[in-house]
Length: 490
Image 1: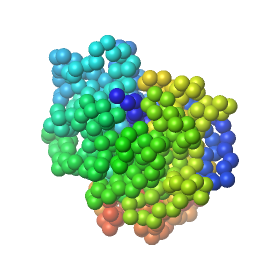
Image 2: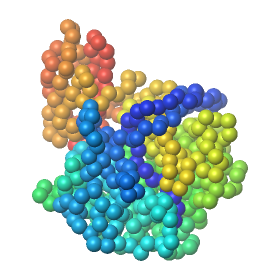
Image 3: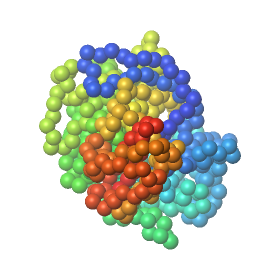
Image 4: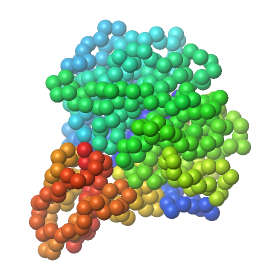
């Protein structure tokens, strides 16, 4: 079983220490690493409205639980995954509080917490150390997908009929509007020819059924032809494309590439096209123009750098290319990887982020909302990770503005409801100085979708009825400064 280092990260970190400045490169793209920060704090996973957060950590018994906290509160965190409650009660062979909860994140609506949960019973590997078992569970082995209310008083298993046929799941990841999900389903791990087992990519519609809770419907196998190993990254801003790691057309999954999959047509595009280099865990930037992934590309001369027992990887930045688009070659290399840039040097002595060569390899992460940062982890031992923040020279992954995005419940501006399902989006200013504020609505590419207008009212509404589902930004320019506030149109 492979350690895929699959962990969900956060879009907000505190308590960091600056340790490095920009690297030089003759092949620099429009954005580059300005600073690398080493983070030693506990990772909060903020809700879409930033009013509360989750922390996924081990309890005193060593079991991964989910803890809830509220913004600005000094009260102790509340464990929402320990007690037997509606939906999870009660378990005989492995009680609920004994089952690890992993891959924790929020549903885009903020109404549900999504995670994978260790199964009540499975044939555990004899004499397996607990640390190794945790590594397998983090990879999705012997887990099912669940959703729960933020308080943990109601739990709902999302795919019981599918998981009964397989050995585990990775995901799900959701489209920005929260209406669709994709995940990898393990089908078989017994064939020695399939290094990481046999996996399928699944797609479902996500619905809230009211009294019976959330559920997946219209589940479809969207596995690309020729793929045996596959896992999801994240969705593009328009929800049409999915980043995947896969071995399509390869004889050995240790040379997996980064693909962009159209979840409707099932067309794929191979971004990296390097069957002897390990490329995994790709994530679209907020504007969909950039991708960060882990890769053994910097060590391609080392024939063992793409092997599970001797892997060496770094975080890399690349330009996004979509199926049916025109492919361009990176002028710095003779293979694909358009606009390639190396962001870290975990395996290079002399760099502040360098770790011992036996471990310390790039794993996975997430972009910040405004695309100016990437929050990543490197694996240092077993299931233990170190945390880093790549700070770019500007809003690298968000072409909307050069202004850093604020949280949707910012000190000066609030937008609601968010997501907006109907036509009306409410905007409220806390303080409007004398003079009018200029407002405009733009999409993730910076295109103005609602023409700019001015107002001197502290509260007003915007008609979003003509907007297609997706991510948008309210850009506000006032005498005291400018802000960009994100909202989702359902």
